[in-house]
Image (cartoon, rainbow, N blue to C red; front, side):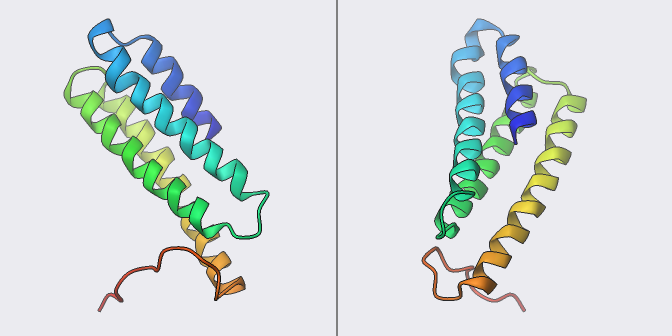
Length: 117
């Protein structure tokens, strides 16, 4: 996540002033929030709430990147890079979440939702 956060910081710095302080700052802030949640999760026993917060933040970052591309602030290639990196991070995050659920079945945190059939 640190690499994606650095990437977002570099892209936000190059955005036009009209969007730098809206889309750019929000993207950077969201990436920093995800990064902070992941760091904190590595130090506490009850990780599920933080992992879910990181997952939601990652989704918000993806939406912001798609919006930035539609506004012409990012190229399709840049969006593709973010999409592939964030997808890999999302898979790792999902694996960490599943392992925590298996390890601590009674731990607090949002339920996975309805079963899919």
